[in-house]
Length: 306
Image (cartoon, rainbow, N blue to C red; front, side, top):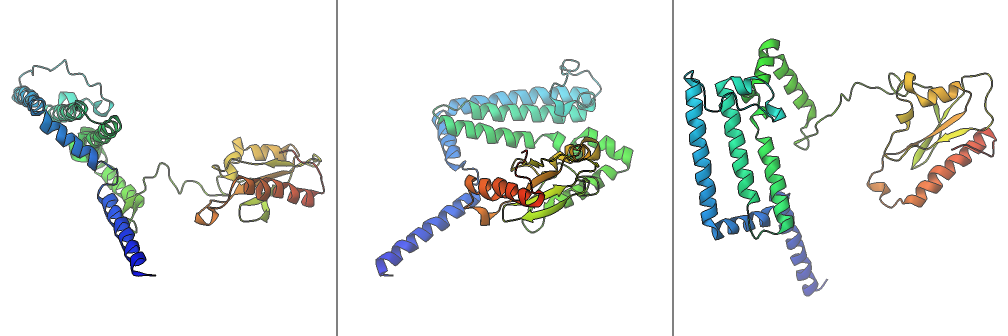
């Protein structure tokens, strides 16, 4: 490699490293939108000032009303402040002056932030949409209902369970946290609740063939008389083979073998980087057609229902 090529390669590497560092600190690509937002603020300072004055006025009114409630007096908004946000459906958010103050402060601040972001002039439509979206995510994440110490429902349940709800929550956190990556993989279901062959996919079957794309599973009929033509089930690539054999009471495969069918099911592999060159044609020939050839060899039948 000559000097010119080496220098060009070095510049490309430096650019890639800089881009990687930039993406690390700005994974959502909001930097330019924030720059445009700041420029818009400096271009219309009177609007920003007016927004701040409105927020200060609202905060003062809330403080006066809350102090009246703390002293046992009826607040100006008491009785007219029915919660419409599902996050604040617990009665303590309204009846308890402390939690009502927290709720009102949050809603007031959230509204001010969202209005400030949405009232920007001269911002690119795509950038404005992205900015509003991520601002909404941040505002929602900061809701007092998301924190144990500012959520009366959580505190009430903690008293009732002597803190066991908090212990269980921490245990769930530990299960979802991956110390190798430092990331949370939030579980939507109990991963230990189902075990293949125990309470899911319990219909007896055996793998009679496999290749790099799939396994072919055969289920033998449970009747004395058997249909001549075998049946091949080809599940979608996004589903496991046992999607039709979840539980005995609603298993299609169990019902089919009970009717006298010889059932074959394709179980697709979970693809990884080694399958990046695989295309639709491979799934047809190495999956469907290969499965039918194996069925013909296994049963001696030239026809198959699929």
